[in-house]
Every structure is written in structure tokens, then in C-alpha cells.
Image 1 (cartoon, rainbow, N blue to C red):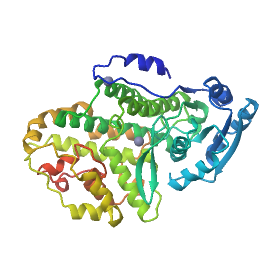
Image 2: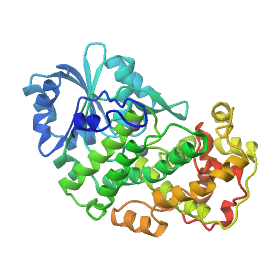
Image 3: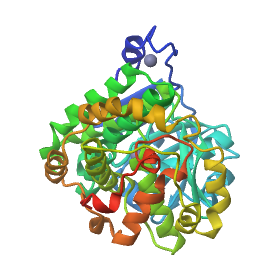
Image 4: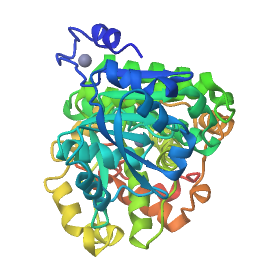
Amino acid sequence: MDIKGLLESLKNCPCGKEHTVDIKAVEIGHGLKERTAEILKSNDFPTNILVAADRNTLGASEGILEVLEQGGITYKLKLYDNFTEPLIEYVHEIEAECADVDGILSVGTGSLNDVCRMAALTCDKEFAIFATAPSMDGFASGTSPIIENGIKSTLPARQPSILIGDTAILAASPAELKSSGFGDIIGKLTALVDWRVAHVLVGEYYCEQIAELVRKALRQLISMADRVTESDEETAGFIMETLVLTGLAMKLADVSRPASGAEHMISHFWGMRKLAVGKHADYHGKKVGVATMMLVDLYHKMAELPEIEFCEDTIDWDAVYAGYGEKFVDYVKAMNIPSATENVTPVSLATAWPEICRIVKEELPTYEELLDIMKRAGAATHCPEIDVEEPLAWDGLDFHTFMRHKITLSRLIYMTDVDTRKMELRF
Ligand SMILES: [Zn+2]
Ligand SMILES: [Zn+2]
């Protein structure tokens, strides 16, 4: 990936922000496993490192340890059995291994990278990722979603300086993981709507150049939907590039808006409730894809309402707190006092409404179009596929928006007479 060219194209951006990234190299291509040591060293990565992996990811990257050794990199291995949840306890485990190394190489995807990314920051170590599956968009991120006491929060972490993806390995990863990555990217559709709505309504920072970067990647990826589940190196490489790019977009904008909106909050809400009853949630991108389907249906139906009344916030806080559970009441209060809509009035919302409806129509395919795209990519589209039953699905829709201090179109429902129960939503 041409990082320099990307930064060059964003020079003197009309949004007024100077767009920068910390990442030095993103190498995605065939046979790069064999060149891992060379790529690390040519980008000044330390030669005394901790390699973190689990049995699956190390198996997928078979031979990588020998490549490191032969390339003059001294490593010690932290091998997990099967890494699933990004618990803070794991961050501490990685930290404990870090005293005698100068860098961390995470061989894997998802939660393993998130845990290593955070430990790299807290221990001040160089950080690199060797990706094993194009399953989610956090690769280039400078933050980590970490679970502490049952709550998933986004915590400061270190953006990797080097990211390597061998397309032979990425293409051979399970189809479910690739479809999950696809679902995560599809989530940018509603993320962009929410971003523009916040911009129109309260003047929140927005960069059209970065939004367009994400849109372009989305369009291209959608055109490849049919090939996602095949073991096709070109498609797997492109999914990976798009996932990295949307992660970079967040860093470039210095906000999560270009890649994360209400669909991510719904996904996190479902995950949190699953965790509360001791269950593992499904893959991040798989959940995000389903949540996006739900919101595309809702957003179009809201935008098509012939009449809509606007009012002050009408929120049943007791129901919200009950939806999150006793343990999270203080957290929800912290996110909502003051309210994300404190600068929105019924009048300002009514004035902006025609523009908001235009944004929905501009950014979103129809529900039927998206359903077809998702099916072709082998991505989950309905709640039963991610083991989310109807009551939890509704709770996700009703309460997700209180998880962050953030305006989303779904948040504005509480300032209207829209009744989601009468909208025949498909999920
Ligand atoms: Zn800009
Ligand atoms: Zn995501």
C-alpha cells in the first residue's frame, strides 16, 4: 500500500486538518511470509522480539518462526491455545513478557492484535502485525477494544508501525472470517451516514476527502462480493487492504467516525450482553454486518416517512439502565450526562431533516440491494445467524446509542414520534 502517496493526496486538505499516520509500511502480497524478517528489518524493527500467536494463527503461518530465526531475529514465543476475547488480563500477560524484548510481533487477527497493540503502548515497545485473516478492520488502529470487568471500552493503544499480509495465507483463511471482514467494511455505509448527520446537525468535524476514500474502497469491494468466499488471493488481498485503509481513515481523521457508527455500537451491545451471561459473541464483522442490515432498513424507512413530528428527547432511562444491567449504570450515565443531543433542538432537527433524508438516500443502497450483496459475499444478514434472539435484537436497537457520547441517526429517533415497532423491520 502506498502510504506516502495516500498522505500526499491528502495534503492541504480543505477540511483544515493535517492528516498523518504513524504506520511505516503496509505490505500485502503473495509469499510475504518468507520475507517477514527482511520487511521488519528494512523498516528498522527491533531484532529482539516477542511473538504472540495462538495455535490456529501459528498453524496458518507455518514456517514463520524459522523465517524470523534465519533472518537474524531473536524471538520468544507467547503461544495461546485459542484466543477469543480481548480481556485486560491478557494485556497484563503480554506486558509481563515484555521486559527483555524491544518489540512485539502479533501473528494473528482480531482480539490477539488488540491485546498486543495495547501492551505495546503500555510497555513502550515497537509493534508489528503479521495478519492471518482479513476478518476485521482494526489492523491499523491506534486504539483497542478491551474488556475490563465485563465492559468493552476503547482504550489507547499503539498503531503498528508495520503490517504484513501474505495473500496466500489470507486467501486460505476460513470463508467465515473473510465474509466477516466483508461485513465489517459494509458497516462503513451507516458509519458515513451517522458522521454526515452529526456534521449537518451540530457541525461536528467532517472530512469529505476521507469519507470519499472510504466510499471508494467500499464500492470496489462490493464489486468483488461474488469472490469473497473463494480462496482467491486477489480478493483476499483487497479485503485486507480495504480493512487496513478504513482503519487508517480513523487515524487520519483522528476520530472513529469514518469507520464506526451505530452499527458498531449495536454489535458491541450484543457482545456485551452475551458476555454478561458467560457466552462468546460471534465474530465482530459478522455482527457488524447484521447490525448494518438492520439499520439500513430502519434508516430508509425513517427517511421515507411521509410525516414526522419532532420533540425534546423522550427517553425511558429506567428501561435503558435495565437494558444494560445494574453493573453498567454508572458507565451509561457517564456517556449520557450531558446528552449527546444537548445541542439539538426539535426545531434544528426539523430544519436539518430534509438534508438528513438526502444523506440516507445518497449513502445507502436499498435493503434489497444490500441483502443481495451480503448473500453473494457469504456474509450473515439476520440475527438468528449470529445467535441473537429477538428480544436481544430489539434491545440492541433500542439501547445501543447510549453506549457512546455520539450523535447517530438512530439516536435521533428519541426526538421524533417514530415508532420502530410499527416499521416492520427485517432482522
Ligand atoms: Zn481532510
Ligand atoms: Zn469494525
